[in-house]
Image (tube, rainbow, N blue to C red):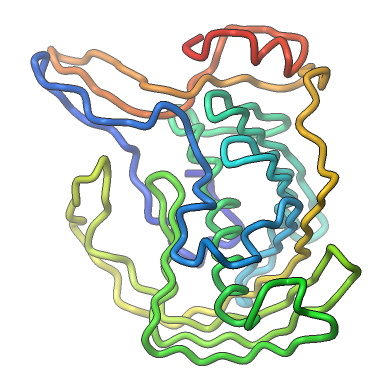
Length: 290
């Protein structure tokens, strides 16, 4: 996974790699990547219908801040514009998940053989922000007509969000202080401070199998500053087929297989593609496996 400015939060992740004998059946993988915004226990919460969301996350103890602006077209197509602010240095890059079968990157230095992990950090913080708003705002965004003060101390409910093989957990007891403000009919801003117990779990789940970790960190208190803007844009257009792809790297998503010493290694991820379409529409016409 890429290093994130908010490194105080553990993104529990290991590559979803299986080592198989030649005669072993392939593990069951999804046909395409879905961002999973309809998989939450609070999926009926009105905050989940937002389709233009900007989130800034940082540790109170660290200098930098990461801001993600997300345009959510559907559960398999999302455009992420990420800006990292460290001192006077600002870097900006974009990641596009297209139809669940393609991943595109612009101005991004993706880790080799772990390119798809780049989606995890912004999606985890998106899901965390939505979960916290669902729990603390007392209702859907349209019910907020003036400044709403958020103040919650939670002793029982653990928040756990996932993206691919990565996960983020807010352990109990945790507390949240902050506010939600009305911008206009379709937009809200939020600003919060979350204090929680952070503990690395003793296992990760890969392909439905629980894998025990060799070491487990001691629990510690952490503080996260989470702010941003929420919007439901009824006029959000679909991703235009004539959008040019000059300057974008293209990766195909699917099974990745490699042979080594008589064994087959199977992974589900993104790999560089040789296709060179001129536009989104041209890319959508191509077979997914290229």
